[in-house]
Image 1: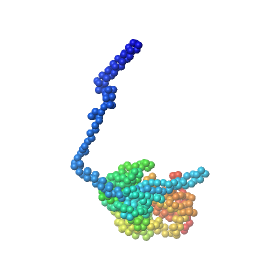
Image 2: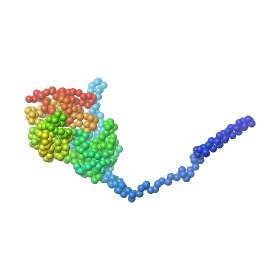
Image 3: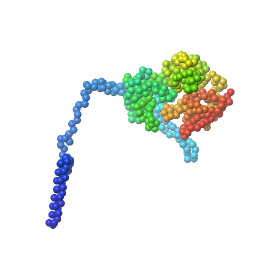
Image 4: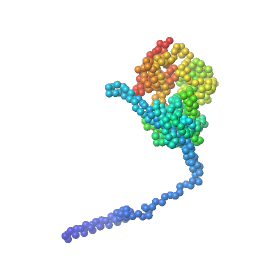
Length: 499
């Protein structure tokens, strides 16, 4: 028994000695020990139990009056514009080609939904948005201020400019936003962009105008570039100036990742003057109105510049002039080079086409031409483009029945969408195929025609003109991207005996 007590005493002395040694070492090294841990766990002193917060800002408000005023004005401007901004919910049906269990190709249809933005521009409830927001959609719902939901109908669309006009079905106190003058916009101007990004609700961002007259396609050559953060969902929303006026409609963003697009400091908007003109044309006629000059053009090749003694890099070379057209009446001739149109330098044929199409019908436009090694000034009165046959040249008068030729070939085409252009596609898209025509079985709706006899085709009127020129003379080889498998194929249209 005594032996047991002795062992316990020795163990106690050893443990106590070890404890005292460790405690001494912790004291010398200023390391908290067990007692400190127990003490802090069970007690609350003044240092750990209280938190005194700052009462004053780091800088007095009266020291930054301009910044405070700017802050208040941003808020006031946002509150004034936001009631005119709407969110759009759309529903459509898309078809996907699949193979059924018997190995037969069938079209599987499924419902698709998407979102976007818009802006109210009339007290009656007219809404401006992007064409790509509502394209191929059967139902469109407009969400206005106060979360009020209305169904809307399409008044008209302009796929080329990516503009659509809607009309809200319902009575309400709609607050329209005024169109500003986009011609007065300058680089560095402060702008605010409104929209519904990623379906999280109406939002606002700010930035400045980075550049004007940016070109992303043959049709859109006068876009406004800004630094306002525009993400998916902002499409169709307004870009406003410091007076709250619409100076643009958000249309596109620049991104290197097409699958997961996001803001990278560059966004583009359709100028308000173009939007307003398109809106008025659609509201009055139900369709956009195109300006028409009546020429076919070619790019300037080194050989052609040498032939014409032309040393500059810009300009549009006139190939042919249509009969009884504004171009013929103005005196345009074969091998003329258009240097300036309406006092603006012409970059290339695509740039000139875009400017002509956006010119008001009846407007007299000054043009600078390079002819016979000198500059010549002429004036053309722009007419309305009303037919695919409008720009046929004189040698095409020999065609007995152009519509018979077009119907026999049987291909109806239209412009590519903005999304398709952003993906890198060029050409024209097949809208429909006429039954029992040559194209039946060769082409399908949705196919993209990129070349005709290895010549690039970028617009529907060029496609039709080429077709009418050669369909009765010889076979025409089309380069086609089949959208069901994204493969490139060659399709031949045999000559028609129409003479």
